[in-house]
Length: 598
Image (tube, rainbow, N blue to C red; front, side, top):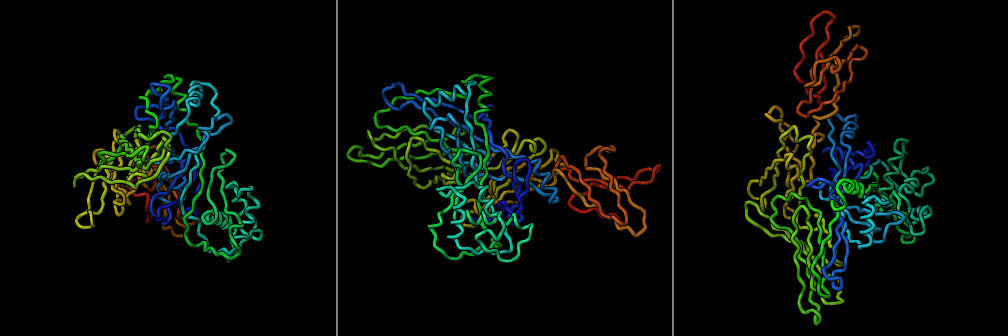
């Protein structure tokens, strides 16, 4: 896996309940973890939340009554606060949301029914959205409906996420006996080799002499925390994994291999080498709060639906197909999945086939496989997509995959596509015209690169570009933002083609700025008073900053805030003695160069 651009765990900064990381390789924006999750808003307004009950027309024939709970989660990021922290460290730093992949949602509580008490895989779509769909009983649906109407609903939810990054590097080697290390860790774990993630951290925070490892070279005091973190990352990568807590709590846990599984020997880790590492992130949320608020205003019908379906013959399997995909899919004319249950003679001499076409925004469908009575609910599914461009239409297919059950949940990775999700936030679109260009090599590498340009607007702030799997390799994205009227222009890229969320924070010209002001003053020379005014700010005493330079202190830093990325600069002038007319302001200057006053 390519490490460049991943979070560098050695650079973690705390900000507003989240963490901010520099990218490994020092190219690109700093990456911010989400601070919270909540139910997303639907396109029509209100929460993207639905509780559907499904019954057959005849109670004595399939399908048996059931209910489906379907909602989408959105990750939220405190980007403004993170930008202020980043600019304290790096002049012109940019920040971006850390893209999420994988993880699971778990529901718990003292009175939670068993069909709710399970882990729901989270399939993120590249835009900070994940779909949660689960089949529940009619009885459980009744409890949820009563809770949404205002009754006590003692259910809490945790999202167990995993962040992929690069472990801290240190100029040390670590030598140890893996059997001895795992035996020592087992003493701090439970009978199944599980322990809280914080307990693993406490283990490696011990005095070095108390650890069953030998560290080459002297460890400085300011390296001690990074050393412990690096040892945790290496240990989990080689001997363990992150798991959900067994006590239904908020703290993530880890499971370690038993010491008996390894014989005595000697391992050596070079901590200076980059290592792909995983770290847990657990967020608590209430997926029912937004729905309950809507019910208070508009009634239970706003978030529930009752569906009556035709009765099914004995043995027929009704499969509910759901997919978590971007609603905007450029170049896709059809998308779906084929289901196939091979023939089972003599009960069923022919294969059972069904096709589910998925259309946004619901991206769900019900299909029926006509199986024989008492046949297991097993089949193979194959995703497909029909793409169209200037060269014509092309159908691409995924790999056949075995599956069981009447609920088929699909994520973007199950489709034979490379999808590049590009979005822009309203705060940027309200003040800029944003246009993106995707370039990719021509088929076979011959000929000029293929370009596709598109605009992002307030009416259409999200676009998802679909390519056949593997075709995104070598592709790039360029973003041009232009002030209405053409007064100012900014460009991002070319960037490697990938999911991209564009905001004011994407541009180094926006937000907190710092300028070093310096003058060459001979010993004994009088001090200089330098007045500075942010570009576009009114010429008032409150807006004007003042820096005093003296021979013994000829350098001073001045900070200000640029509310528009199109006006990031400042003007300056020397203050004249009282009674003299002020000097004219200078032309606007860049905040990314020091101000040297002759």
